[in-house]
Amino acid sequence: DYVVVKMIPDNRLPPRHLHAVHTGKTFAVIKWESPYDSPDQDMLYAVAVKDMVRKTDKIYKVKSRNSTVEYTIKKLEPGGKYHVIVQLGNMSKESSMKINTVPLSAPDALKIITENDHILLFWKSLALKESNFNESRGYEIHMFDSLMNITAYLGNTTENFFKVSNLKIGHNYSFTVQARCLYGGQMCGEPATLLYDELGTGEDSSATQSGRPTDVAAIVVPVLFLLLVTLGIGFVVLYMRHRRLQNSFTAFANSHYSSRLGSAIFSSGDDLGDEDDEAPMITGFSDDVPMVIA
Image (tube, rainbow, N blue to C red; front, side, top):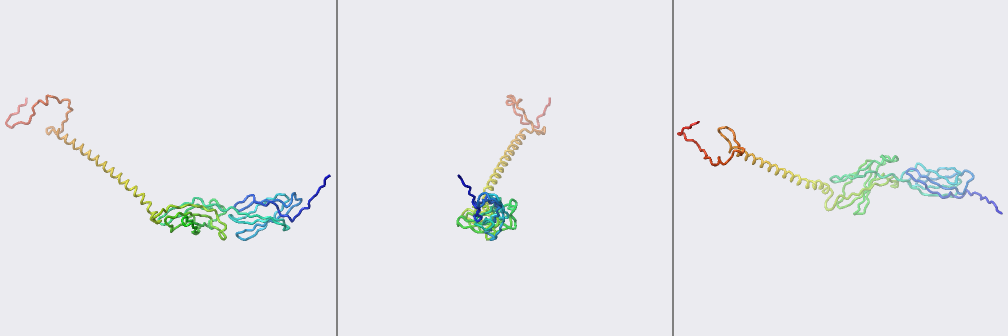
């Protein structure tokens, strides 16, 4: 024996298993189940979205006969905080949850350029990759001093660079750049962080930064000087050798010069023999001795 029992639907029960399926920058997909299984008619739900930052409310109506309902909440703001309430249209018991949308991305290519007495922070515009970002919103810059363990707010700008001055010697700094926070600093972009520890110790920032080119020059200048000295010595040695060879050749040529012929006579050395060594040297002729030519 058996008996069939049909439960009377209770529309005062809250929706079941409310949760977020996916959360983006400007939307959120939520899902829940009906208060009881297999509804036999359309059920009207009220989805209330409370903006915890702006302090505003929006209510959406959703009608479905399915046991599982999925709904997409649109027109949210990046980095926002929301409280979502789902209940039947007859104001029955409610189910609620909190949603935090994805914040704007961090700026790309954050770099530091060092000047004599300050540094410049540079980064790429967020508008290049974030369609929801307007340059008029701007960026805000923070600095963390690891030695003092202090975080300071440096300011904001609508440009893609920021000047930082008055850095202390021997301190390491971390700089963060992010989309400017809205409504009391609650809706911010993801920060891009860069560590700066180039100041060293024992010198002020201007002396250290201007000292770098001097250190390089202190190495390059002596090397160039030594190269010039070496080249100069090489030229002097070559010149002296050239002069010595020229003088030797001149002396050699003068020793073989014939005034009668008007030119220098060089012997190959083959016709030199013992007979020349034994032959008497003719030193000259007297004016009173007649010269006979045969």
